[in-house]
Amino acid sequence: MTIRRLVFTLFMPLLALMLSGCGYNEIQRLDEQVKAAWSQTLNQYERRAELVPKLVSAVDAYMVNERAVLTQVTEARAAVGRVQITADDLQNPAVMQNFAAAQGALSSALSRLIAVSENYPQLKSDGLFRDLMTQLEGTENRIATERGRYVKAVQEYNLIVRQFPTLITAKIFGYQTMANYGMDRQDQIMRDPEVRFSTPAPAPAR
Image: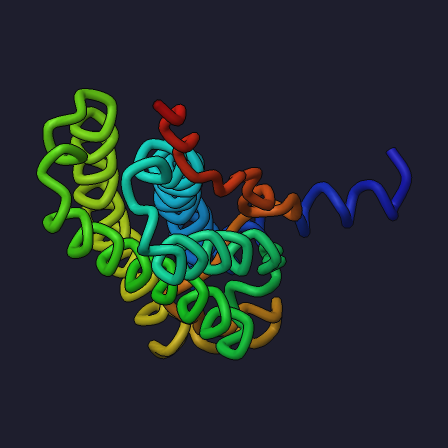
């Protein structure tokens, strides 16, 4: 065994012990926990985005006089699809705020659409619309649940990278506090919607 290999063999266990004692392993665990929690949250955001075109299509034939509301929903959904986030952006508050703003605009537009639907009794009795509304409500509830878990995971992570002595380890390895939004992949969050507005065909002349 060469001297270099002998030193390496003796040094590595000591280094591992030092990193473990300084919280390196715990930082790694919490970092992965944050990413996993966000992945689950993102799944629910994607599911909501997939429901939007179906919902707009279902109400389109009824809401002949509500083109502004339908347009707002479609544009908000498209804006969400244009937000690009990578794992590195978990520590970028500006990017996270843009993501939050896009999702908030979509939530507001959907709320207006739901409010307007109350003025259409025939729409409310439509089976497809009721089914989509049930799915949307369930998705919103799951988003709230997963967001709560994500926020908690971020809080635990931020706490340990701010505490002594783990803050020293965090600084050495470049770990920083995270905002409350992020993702762990580089692909597009949602695809642009394919929604076609149409009006009911006119009744045949008698």
